[in-house]
Image 1 (cartoon, rainbow, N blue to C red):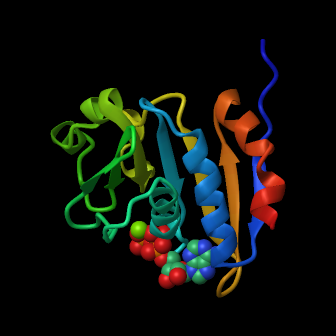
Image 2 (image 1 turned 180 degrees about the vertical axis):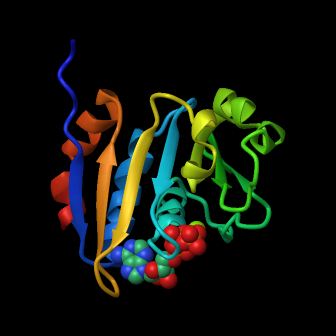
Length: 160
Ligand SMILES: Nc1ncnc2c1ncn2[C@@H]1O[C@H](COP(=O)(O)OP(=O)(O)OP(=O)(O)O)[C@@H](O)[C@H]1O
Ligand SMILES: [Mg+2]
């Protein structure tokens, strides 16, 4: 059996570090990829999604998809859909939100993946955020080797 890939734990000292992590993730993203953003209310999931989209060149406002459930961004060479599953009550609701098509067409960023665990794509990159004070956050990153190798090389960059 292949040895398990160690999780990367990063201390994000402030918003600038979160933005650097977003830029690092953006560089790894390809069509078919899913990034699951976990963490409590206010942990920084939307902030990290904004950082990823900003690094991909999105200049329009990036609202939280709390009510729309999904927002679509056409970036250069990659369509990115940003989901927030906080308000879904039944995992089947995800079928109407076109997750399979979104993955066939581009990449997805998903806040509150815990609300539809059975529908989450295998092979996703998971970023779990925890508050560690007003502006500090801990990011625990896990996923397939392709992501982890790419991100391990960027750890120093994220630490700043
Ligand atoms: N290092 C940091 N990384 C991310 N957010 C930070 C950081 N420091 C402070 N913040 C602040 O924490 C808040 C995070 O809010 P955000 O909407 O991103 O959380 P969320 O996890 O998406 O919450 P929700 O579950 O409601 O969707 C923002 O006000 C942001 O400015
Ligand atoms: Mg959010």
